[in-house]
Image (cartoon, rainbow, N blue to C red):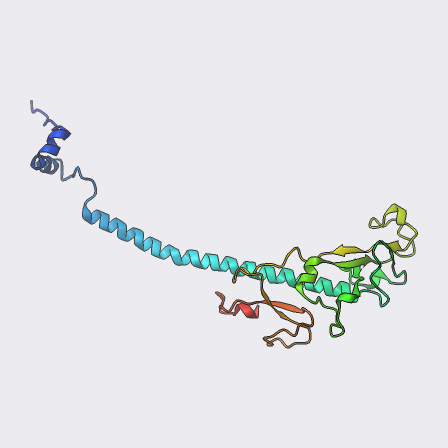
Length: 237
């Protein structure tokens, strides 16, 4: 009966390298040292190719995410600017800022139904608008963050009855107190430049004007000078 070849001890193979090579060849070429140099080179090469191919995809994904954040930020500020303008031009001609601690008489002749349904209040503090800013767009973004005094419109012929916005003690009276409204929580940060700095354009300037005339803020654009993935300039958004 043919006897099975015994496996030499590891300590014997370490002390006698020639025996280790001979036993490795007899076991079908398997080496006790693990991967060969050629296998390691192939593995490293494949990993390098995969890494080099993944890095550009990651960069494009990050850039696309920042561009979407920029579009969302510009849309948010422009919506706030338009709402500020609507509530500023909706103010009655006699609207004035009430003294501290006193109430202001709302205009009972103002018809809320004839206004934009998005307008629930009007800006009562008209002192924030200069003579040059007759269209009453916000003078700057800081005003929209700090807030302005606003007043609700008169509640109609019912004197506020059935209007959830009117307190029970104010029913039948047009006396309502001015409140401060904030149109922006803070000045947003440009995701492309990483700074809370923006280019402004007033309603009296052309689209291609590069310098702001400091009259009002009609539009806001990014200060980034780069080009988006779709080939458009960030400053044109």
